[in-house]
Length: 294
Length: 237
Image (cartoon, rainbow over all chains, first blue to last red; front, side, top):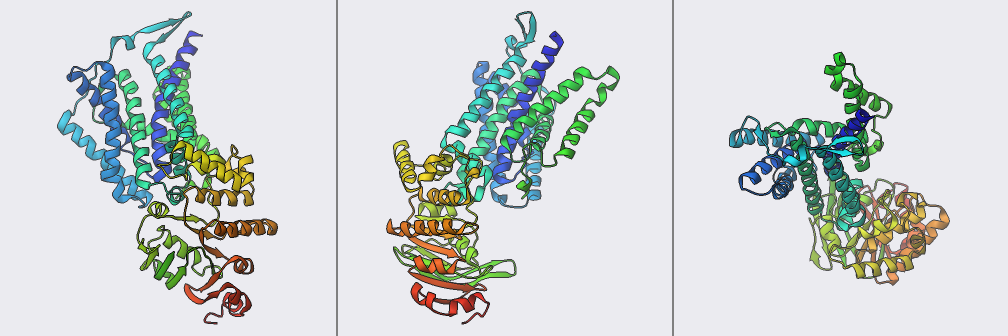
């Protein structure tokens, strides 16, 4: 019972992080057809921002705000400098551009900051455990679940209730038509990038708190996972991205818990094999529309 | 109101529109007629800034608006109801309207605009919380027209509003379009339904193979055999 609960908590917190990342990827993809592989570098920027904040003597909360804001700004800068000039180009051009942005940032991190992992100080309170009526649970996973849950709910509210949120959803459905009802392409794309940056930044805080360190390549793995989640959920579908993220997290945590020790090294391969199985049954993803390919 | 001169549109080597002139006067309904593939939609897309024209000038109320982005043209007072309606199907009816309101509009003004659309299109009031994709074809066409009106345009371009609709619904939509003129709007109507278009239009143009082959008052066009011959492919009639 205890173990099951632990695993459930782990899966939910991992799924929450994947969901924030996947939502950012899906938002940008659905509006401008770009799969942004430089999304991971936004996480890395937030982690370095946490170190910078600590170096400036800021309390942890303020350092988090600094780190997340840096990711949001970096995302908008990325769009302005790298992606706007190739807007409307083929999917391959956009994809290669995002690889280039990712590579350039990684080299900059290596040469200007550090090639080796740097420790990120996290408040001691996050490392503790809580006793919930006999069930022991880590503070950090619990905070991750709460944090990501609240954020996802807030985001759903923004997308449903605010005019900029409705404009983003409309742009995700038919970008050209959104322009034809008078919405500025630059504004809605910048908003989508800014939002995806903030989401990546917040995901990074939870991710780094767990690892305790940051290196120039840190963002690659979680964003690769988020990308898989987006594909499983159905490219272009926002709710699909969230469902895909939690599905992937449950598969990963489930395999880690259930596999016999000698099979554990193959757990990633098995997880991906399950994902391939899902895609064999539904090539367009769980919530995908068949005509989303541009 | 709208003046197009020497407009050319090409997709690679394919010349869809070959240097046409077109004029829509204040308060007029002008029909742009022609068979499939004549270049009618390309003309509208070029006027709206969606497709960059290869040559030509577009003037709106005397101001040169050639090369402006679609969103800038909307702010300048133009609106397009596109072919196939292109409503945002997963969004609710109200969301479809709200998204088309200009960014600066206040909440109270927005509510008033929605009220006005509900009065003009009662069926949209009934269905306001429904997903737009669940509406019937005629209702979706009404939503597409209402959506374009949210921007308070002075010049409306309609692309094949009768396409795929049942005959009595088509009549209803054409009545609606005539009603828009009575509200002071200027309308450029692209249609394949020649008879109905010429009934409500003041003037008409006939486009064949990317070239303007005929133009004149609607009544004269309706009476002439030229339109019919143009549709049969006998250009230059």
